[in-house]
Amino acid sequence: MRAWTDRFGDGTPDFLRLTDPADQAAFRQWFTLIADYQAIRPKAEIPAEITDCASLLRYSYREALKRHDDTWFVTTGLRLRRCRVRFAPGAIGDAAGRGLFRVRPGGFEAADATNGAFAQFADAKTLVERNAYLVSRNVREAQLGDLLFLGNLASRRRGTR
Image (cartoon, rainbow, N blue to C red; front, side):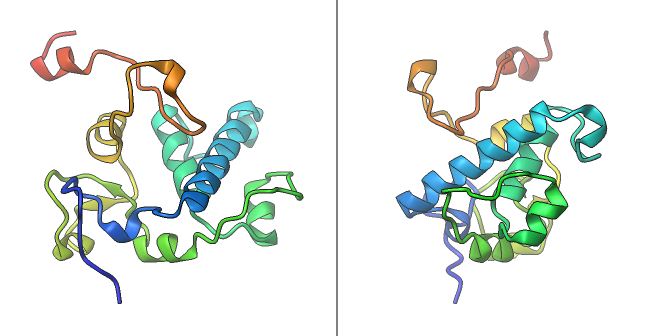
């Protein structure tokens, strides 16, 4: 039975969190592998949904949570057969369904699973504000898969550039 809890009060339900360190490491490896692969492909071979940095993040996140079987490799075009990454993401990917990205503010409530609080799409601002958290301002502390957001979000919130 799924627990409808949000222990951090950040809007992400606990069942969507990777709590096992091995799963966290595997997700980071899959996420970066997928993003790197898409970034180096010729434009004509990149999935049509990838049009900017935010869409690359969304795509890589979703694909990292999928089962990586032979069908997945054929579908994505990833030409890696001997991958040391071990990850059984089905439970999270299946539980999340199509809406992996938090698009409404507030802590998680059970009704959020069906009321549109999560969506398949989130723009860059929503990814930063509702689907990521600050680890450090020191780039030397970044780990594989950490995201670097550049820009002056504070001035955008005030309406200046």
